[in-house]
Image (tube, rainbow, N blue to C red):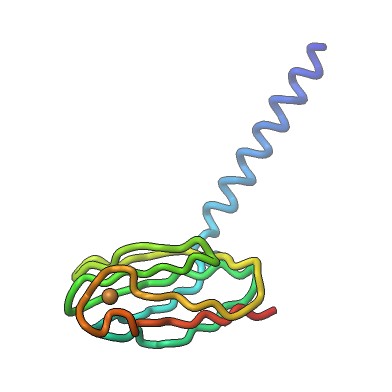
Amino acid sequence: MFSQKIRRIVIAVVACCSLMAVGAGSTTTKPREIEIAAKRYSFNPSEVTLKKGEPVTLVFQTDDVTHGFILPELKLKGEIHKNHPLKITVQPDTVGTFEARCSYFCGSGHGGMRLAFHVVE
Ligand SMILES: [Cu+2]
């Protein structure tokens, strides 16, 4: 029983050290970033291709008014404020084309603000 307890402690220490090793190398595993500019009344780029299973950070910025972003199929949403980039990390697990839209009323052309996501194998 005593040795079992020691074994557990050893396993805990090894697990802890391997987590630290992963943490130390995290700069190489940082998700790829895709910058997307939102402005009245479009997203630029208007189409983004993601790879299934690959984590990617979407960085939204605006220089005019507040915009929003919603993509129900990938359970993503947020508000994009001037001088405050919106960062959303996504790891899509479904292949297909999904259409995101602006979710914050930003003016007369708001309804036309669309952004297509193509998730490929
Ligand atoms: Cu809008």
